[in-house]
Length: 218
Image (cartoon, rainbow, N blue to C red; front, side):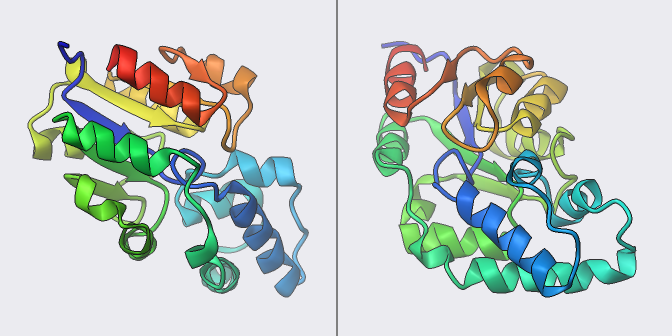
């Protein structure tokens, strides 16, 4: 079967790993530790996918930049205490493995730090399947297109034959800004109605639907 894409780029949290709830709890726990106003679950879910600095600026606009490191430290304390126990979505490993074996070039574009992504790539065993990855602490944060632009340049892919898969509006906006197609999944952080405003090729409600879509259309 002829492939429609050469490069498929995945977001990580909320797309391959069922980590949205842990991220929300870690943000709220960090704010409680520092006696800051605790943001709602909806507000926390909205910033998933952004780099930590950008996420803090959105959630706590009155917090001074001097206090950012304290909040980041407490967030990492909460999150890193559980990250090895956060599961991949059921079927995620199979999807990535099968795409790799079918000859697709695979990438990751994530709001995680390089340290954080390397940790999960190692303990999930998925690192062997990805040809290149980009993180929020080495590129402009989503929705800036730099992550995708760098991945395409490094891997020799064109915009027309690149597909971005993500669970947040930030992922889909990044794809639009980079001029590449996007595929939305609504089982992660952002609701379906918000994802659909960014014109993805499809919006899939379950990871099994993602697997079938890729099998048929990628």
